[in-house]
Amino acid sequence: MNTPEGAVPGRSGELPDIMPDTLPETLPDVAPRLRELRRDRRLTLETVAARAGLSPAHLSRLETGRRQPSLPMLLALARIYGTTVADLLGEAPAERDPIVRAGRQEPVEADGWTYHRAGGSGRAMQPLRVVVPYGAQGDLVRVHPGEEWLYVLGGRLRLGLGDAVHLLGPGDSAHFDSLTPHRLAAADRGGTELLFVHTLLQSPAADLH
Figure 1 (tube, rainbow, N blue to C red):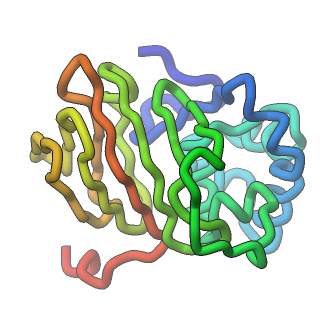
Figure 2 (figure 1 turned 30 degrees about the horizontal axis):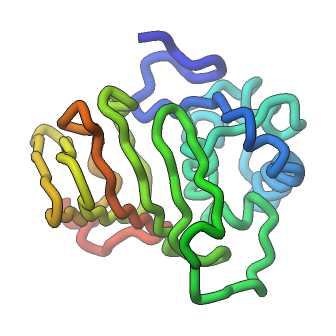
């Protein structure tokens, strides 16, 4: 498997940095915001790059606007900085409409997965409706602070949690601390669709493991 440009070889949870063609135009404030957040937290390029699975040079290109991050990478950087993707995108928290109407938010595709926003901006809990095609990102191991909850809407999902592998069908759900290494993949060629919620907060139960 080829290592994405800018990623640190051999690190689990590497995140791709290829942005879909339609998304860069919607990210005018990402570069300065990434730089501002890192400096406010008094973190070095090397520290953030190591946590995100990137090289310092590649993170520098993201902060200067020479490269655009993918949605999975934005999720990772938001967790590192203790904020939300909406904040990285410059969305005003004041616009907290509690209702998200179907069809009003354009879906975003990143590395084969399709993400539909299912919640408001500027909140710690970030819900998404996700379409996972067969064979997309199935080998990607994710490890990060926070919690995740998912509910399978259609198709079957193969969920790896640590050394265990679970097969989930429609109506099944999972709730876990995301410091546990985890992998998500469609189990059927028709793909799977799920509701997905992640938070920036870590469950106190994680300290017991």
